Image (cartoon, rainbow, N blue to C red; front, side, top):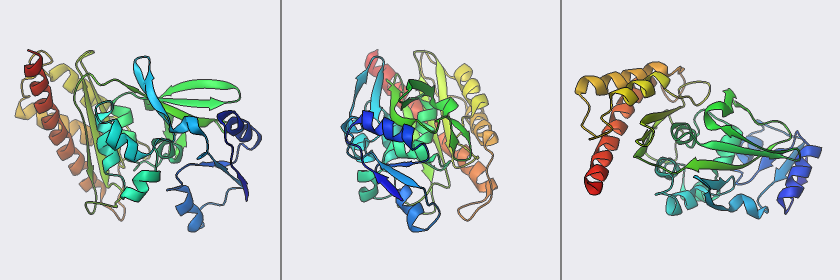
Length: 289
């Protein structure tokens, strides 16, 4: 197995162009597990840990640009106000050691439907920045996932960053696991309220071949929610929202949980995150009044 370790972004892109079958590695929290268990034996590894640009984050117009190599720990400690749902999801990732090494870029590259970062990226309408020697292109997270572990990234491209919209309203993330820590999600859900555009965003993890949105649930709540006053939705509306979220899922039975349980859990998480979001929305409305 060939091992390449570029020190600049240009060198990394050139190496990927020359070796399109090389597997990028940053934190190694997923790739090394696959190698150790002999589930993957790529012809080459492309180590990106020495490329400084990937570890940078900061404002980029109306977005926050999060380098693909920024670890979860930094997101938790530094970016809670810029990306609340993503920070909440980052807190649930494995152990402190894994959070110190693991990255959103790695989650996107592996594209596991159970990845914790995916639902917040979908709910907030984040943008994935892809780069190659041919140039840079931006793909909305909602168009990034094409199939089971298949994404819009081309073979000669690397994930450079994620562009996160500045939050205009509450964002929340919820996850169900077989225990409280060090666990892959049985299923997960993220909700984002956007009062500026009066839109609702959702993201579902580990309940379909890819991370998905609950589009009908978004449309229903966008029309139902009291954007002016933040009035608590009726019990019937809350339950219907949960049902719409559950109906969007396409789960399977596996060792972590049954399809029926996943749908039930999603309906519960949808109702809970909505309750949390309404509470936050009303607090912010009172503060600004």
